[in-house]
Length: 423
Figure 1 (cartoon, helix red, strand yellow):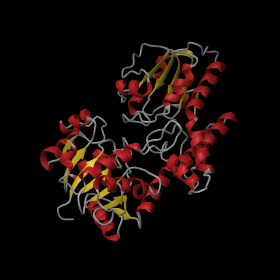
Figure 2 (cartoon, rainbow, N blue to C red):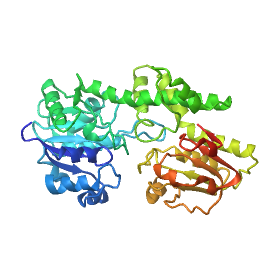
Figure 3 (cartoon, rainbow, N blue to C red):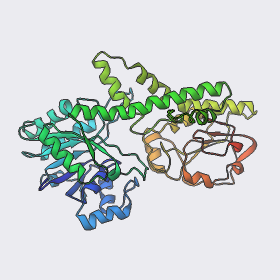
Figure 4 (tube, helix red, strand yellow):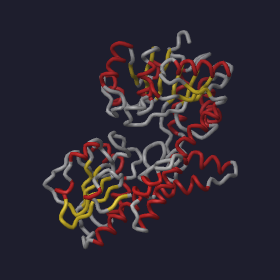
């Protein structure tokens, strides 16, 4: 591991925490195309809140960490880590464009004997069959002769201050046994709980994709149960608590499945499986079911409003939260927008309050106006708790509604005696 110098390409929720951590042991630079993002990071602030400003400033001041948009600054480094998004398009087909563009960047700066490690979530084969040929073409170097590769799937959980990057056990792999050892050693040197060295890059890629697919399927099962029990007028949370008394019952809760991982990654394996003639029925059904839960929540709220005699047309509705999960500003692939759009067919008087979300970013991504401030003198016909932000516990929700209004709790977060329905 002598003279390892690390360049991390992509400084989002995954790349920045990893780059900051690497900088404690190695000379490290971060690269991103977003100039404003690079500027804020070099000024010691992370707007995603994944890295505390104090930690980031320590990395800059005491470990020489820096960020850049200038590709030429990467040429002196020899261990490249790619941590860019892997989204799907409007038809839920994998979009490898960010990964291919990042590979082109690597191809322009990589030198003989250098290593490139991919962290982006992909289907098995992407690293060696899609990315490496791009690096070869741009660089003119031959894979596993002139340069080498590895894969270590990210396991960042946005907003999670317990399972931070240094505490996560990481899967590692390399394109040769010797490179696998080097990659494993590099990651092991900064991780508290060590690594699991996979026997191949494809195994490492597959391990990541099934981590998220498994959770997607499990949550889909709970969502289906919630629909069944709601139809039977049985409280799903009561059923889960009772079943949890058995030692081998896996306790999960129904809910909205958004974000850049669980709500996206399964499509990569679904698409690749069909190339091999396998129709992944369970995964496909789970995706379809989970993608429909926002509309289901909205319709359940409308049903409760009708039962109470609350006119849905032009009703004044408050949605609490728009981020895809609690206590973080991440709005990627949030399913709260599906609740909004379904209700918006009946009323324009919808307020979305989220103290964590960036108002301008939400408007840019979803063309929806939200607020970071709630006027508690307002009165609503319905309130939907969509995200379990701890800050919402300070709200007197009963003071925001009329006597016959509806309060619906998506997260099982509120006191039962004030709500009219929940998943």
